[in-house]
Length: 359
Image (cartoon, rainbow, N blue to C red; front, side, top):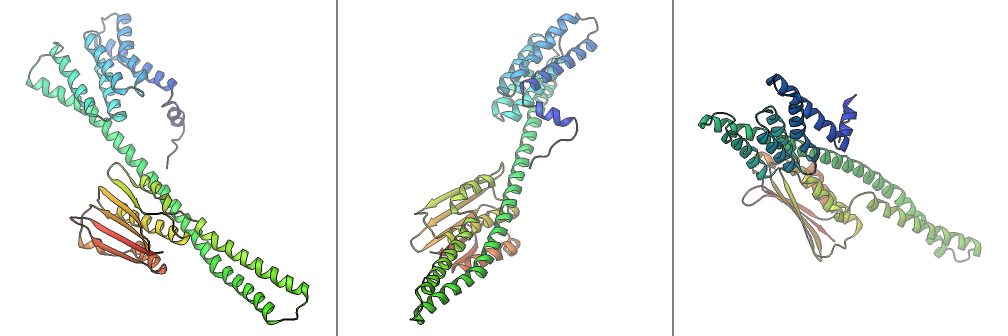
């Protein structure tokens, strides 16, 4: 669920991923470095300072496509032009933070700390144990900030995916409820109409040909309508073939969900839809109430039944055994299909939910 920024920030958000946006960022960085440099060294040649500021900011043009390369180039320019351009270090540190945001790899941290150590060794400031300690901390800070921002973004996107999935689930459940009501009410009357029309044809032997044809048409039309009504319910919801998408949405930065299938996936429509809903509710319970980092979903198509198992590695505490509306709904769904639902502590930890639905 994306939030549209208000007012003038909306235009800036649109520019953030474009070449024009990169150019504006580069120009702004060069202007800031030039201004700080002239304030730090009022007697310096403005043209030299402007050239150095442009050189240190120029690699920012490629920061989205090659973030680590851009950061290393910024650092190299600062090391080479350190006397006239000490404020350029801010640009290099920001570039390494951007690299950690776009490419969170160990090499980013090593380069972020390493270039500052090289800067100290080059004689920019007195070298000592405290100096190197300060530089290590300065190198770690932008990388930590970039990684934290990326983690925040990933969690926000994951939460948005869960929200959209939950919304779709609620809508699909409502569609399924309406379809079941139509099946129960209209289907019953259509069945009665067909039986009555067929009974009249068999009981009354001396019907006129036109009346007999009309009754036959009524019986056939009601049978066709009943078949179409029965086909509405499976089409209103998802099926076991949609579990890949469900697993992808449930996987996040702090949790891995895997799916394993066994056997032939050819199952009756009602069982197919109910199996998906059981797996979805079991995963939803894990996402809401468990601290698990790994969840295994297994669908075993056996000759006599479909067995759906959801196992996680979260903590197992007595309070987790309390059943809410979700688990009661799962038991009711399984019971309506003549199946069973078991919820047991996992080994060595976590919980194991197993639904067995007969074919």
